[in-house]
Length: 471
Image (tube, rainbow, N blue to C red; front, top):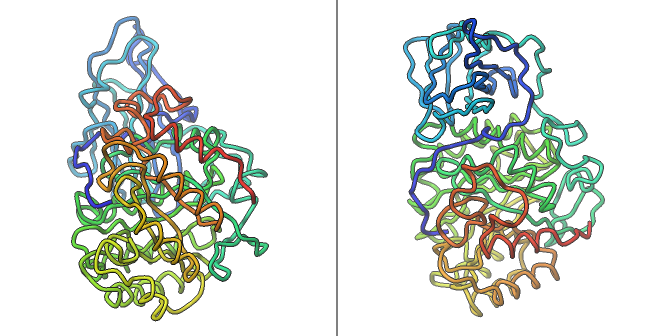
């Protein structure tokens, strides 16, 4: 999508985490006072993800909180959410944000963070009193760097035996179609996150449980912007966030598309060095998974196919050397419109000079209220020449806003169903625009289940994702 919201919503990556705390809680004095417990959510050897749950076990409302702890030398904090962080050396203090400082009696709030290193927190205090949540949990969970789809995940996603990944395994491109491990052509249907720098609290364990279990989604597209307050501002933080989302999708039996969401500048070669670094780590970490697809250039624009292909020729080998069987998705000219939004001719140009190698697909994006017959006809023609994956579309105009054109969108969906072209819809958030599936404020509330908090576009796309798969 060409235009994106820059309204920064607070990240809430683990606000709805349902894991039981693994550390003992303790009171700060004779009277019942706030307590805090620590959970190590995931550990991948070189780093880990942690969460604190603060519980008001007293009889009066708490108006603010501040939790402090120490980390040993060599362990640092990267990304964090649902709290404000100040650090001095190895001492870290997390304070409430404006919306989660008030905690009623019996209620709890959580915040989380990602750390690099092997050491755990010690000396935890909450509002100046011991919280007994620091240090190593009394019952440490086993490391789960690559939880397979057959392992019972932490928040009870759908049974792995019927999950999309369990049903289909490692995907590959056969001819012009996406095929499963048995060589049968399949169609994946799912959702794209909004930018994870803005709407992390919309992609939580709780919301992804709903996406996997209630919506029956096959695939989650993880949209990591490169610019626009994204990867370039903190590569370590955003790489760790993508690792985290891959694990969440994996645990729920969904496929995960890693979206290198380059948009402006439109020449992907501007970010070539960053892309090679990023995909090298992602592919190395997740090479043993069968559910990861790599989208290496979201919406190239302002450059010809030759420039996009030159970029792909340099990035694809980085992935292939580590994850040789994975499907790689390559953006197409003029905002992945197959050239229709520019000079045209993109389909024939790509077909005459494709990226070398197998297991490659080309990306098409459309927004139904803006992209009518010319786009539809080009897409239909391209489907007979190229392997295609629609990684982003909406029922609105190209800004992701405005009235929905469900009739035109249905034409596209019918075509994709007939040709088994996989798709993800933009977007799984509560952004104010009409293309976000949730009404504004939903993600902060943590109430994702059902249909009462869905916008019209959300209800419509949910129904289409829920249609039984034909694997």
